[in-house]
Structures are given as C-alpha cells and as structure tokens.
Image 1 (spheres, rainbow, N blue to C red):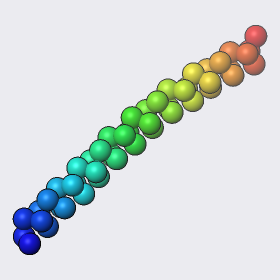
Image 2: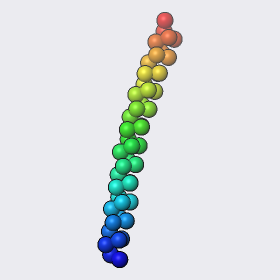
Image 3: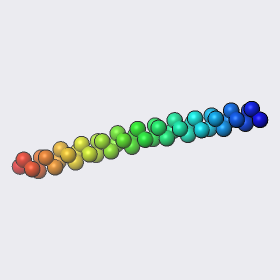
Image 4: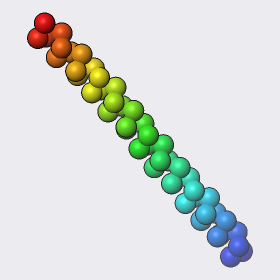
Length: 47
C-alpha cells in the first residue's frame, strides 16, 4: 500500500515538473513572438 502511494506521488511530481517546464517553454516562445510583432509594428509606424 505504501509503495503504491510513493509511485503515485512520484508520478504526480513528474507530471507537475513536466507541466511547469512546458509552461515556461510556451511562455518564452510567446514572449519572443510578441517581441518580434511589437518591433515590426513600431518599425512600420515610424517609416
């Protein structure tokens, strides 16, 4: 019984870490895209 709880705990921990890493990656990509869009938008305005 205890072993099963440990395994479930590790699985939840692994999923949590995986989700966090994935979220960080998505946020970084999103920021990069938004920065590029922002720069292009302002470049067009000043031309």
